Amino acid sequence: PQPAEGVNYAHKIDKAEAAIDWQAPARAIERRLRAFDPFPGASTVIAGQPVKVWRGRVVPGPGAPGQLLAAADGHLVVACGEGALELLELQLPGGRRIAARDFLLRHPVTPG
Image 1 (spheres, rainbow, N blue to C red):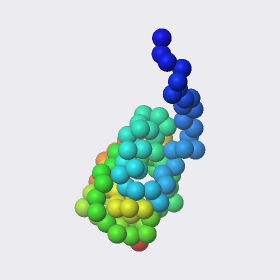
Image 2 (tube, rainbow, N blue to C red):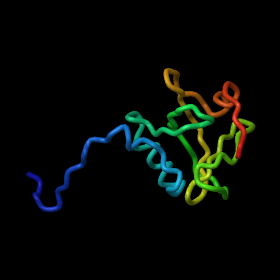
Image 3 (cartoon, rainbow, N blue to C red):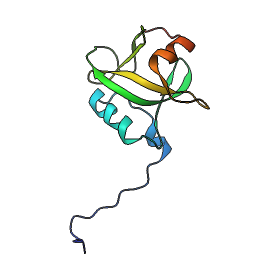
């Protein structure tokens, strides 16, 4: 039997919790991507389209949180509250997971 002391309840993850808060540090967001894979997946909006983000990598980069810093040569980088996050694997609604390079080929976006 487990001790009753120190036990706490972990509530079910809600889809609303999956929205990426770009004010958070890049490291925290990257961990959240891993935690929410496979369900519910972390989500954001890029160029007006809802997108699930499955993998990312912390990179240096100054900018306003949520600002798209780079969108070229297969690199999609978003500024965070601390640092930046390079998005590596994305998914559009009804689509399959694709690499950032493929996403940019099909849906070109501009930084800014």
